[in-house]
Image 1: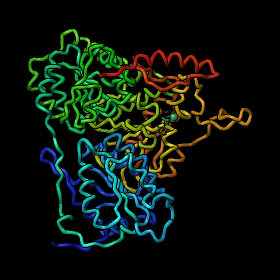
Image 2: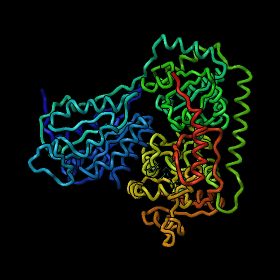
Image 3: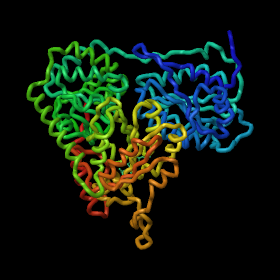
Image 4: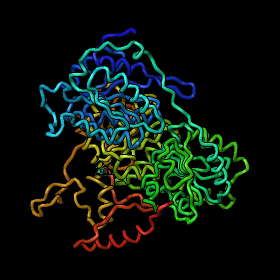
Length: 620
Ligand SMILES: Cc1ncc(C[n+]2csc(CCOP(=O)(O)OP(=O)(O)O)c2C)c(N)n1
Ligand SMILES: [Mg+2]
């Protein structure tokens, strides 16, 4: 057997750069490189290996959590056909990645995490940053990754990567099981040499499967669809990952079945598609929520049915409603006692098109869809153009962005009041123009995420809509965007704190307590003093960004135009008026309210809560 003597870390990097994926006859390298921050736990191991392999690019992030966000956004933009690895030192560098790992796994997006770990050779323990245990020497902080990883391993001998890395690749390229993969790398093992089989380091192509459905269940799905008078498709992220856009569009046109979209599924159809009824659920459109309520058949395609999609299980009121779940993951396919069609969305939608040539929704239903769509279009126009002259509404900011961006440009967001507004209001004119991380809804995802998208698709302009709360939590990758020469655009909405959680707090009788950016007030002892005086533009300028500030719509539109001419990252700080919030449209979200309280408003909110919770359903 031909072998090559390498350190564990050198072998890992060589292996990673030789992995490719293939789908529909197209082959591409799987890894675009490694993001990392060096410390003593990886600098002389993985760091040394990266130095020796300049053709496998090392990217230097500011924060380990952010680098995972960045990697995940890249993978999402690539519809999971590409990914990054992330290296960290041991201890805090490693645990900083745990949040990113959870986000990746929840959103079913691939990322390979290579946290440094404590010495496998234990004689020098406890090493700097080691968590000691009295009951085991086989515990480190990296055990925290176990519940948030789809595959987890610790490499205690150099030869273990021979079996571990192929497992990592199997999971990363699995359509049903992908997510965060964590391979913890003890600091000493990274540097130990071993004679690796040359075959192990040869190029390898992983086929991304398109799984056909079970034939019997497929036949039954045809019967269920034919029997349905008021079906509704809910398109989730799976439509993107299967790249089933054309198939879905054709099926919806042919049958006139309306299509609603989850956050991850938005962009499955373009906004002018005649069957698209828009967002569904808590942040849904009026027409989509009305159709969901009355539907006798929900066809979920690539959706996890989060509580935002199901309106906390209150969305489907028809006593006869049943579900067909088309999903690559058996786990999701079985939700809500559905007919579980485990398979690829593209394949099944094509097969439905062929088999259901005789099916059309009833005429009156088709008309309801048309009318609902046109009424919604007017509502969006209204919210885009409220006509403020002073501090604008967030919906106007979104409208101006939607009208300014080219179809292929990307809007990204994850947390705050913007996800709901964007879900309802964004008009998608390109399948990949809308990027919402709403599985984990993690504040801080937006700026690193924007950079990940830009690296995945440099030909597109990327605009991150970022709350002031979110900006304060994680703004540092602005620096990385400048370092790497990738221009991203930040629209920073300054509304003095958490408009979203503040509104939620007030709606539940809690007076917005602790949700605005105010000084501690010596008189009350509370955080109800004057607003913090924050100059976000000054802050971003310090990072090297081009900055603009707007206090009305005219200034905002002007800033957008000026930012477009800049050759590097831009930040537009726009001050808004939260009084003009976008309403909800006949939906509900279960946020538990105190059962007893000394505050009248809380007791009232509780009564309302108990009534609404009664509408939550189980499906057996
Ligand atoms: C990391 C993280 N911490 C806390 C939350 C809970 N949370 C959701 S939205 C929000 C406030 C966001 O404030 P901001 O970014 O200013 O957006 P706005 O609500 O003003 O639109 C918080 C704290 C979260 N989603 N992510
Ligand atoms: Mg805010």
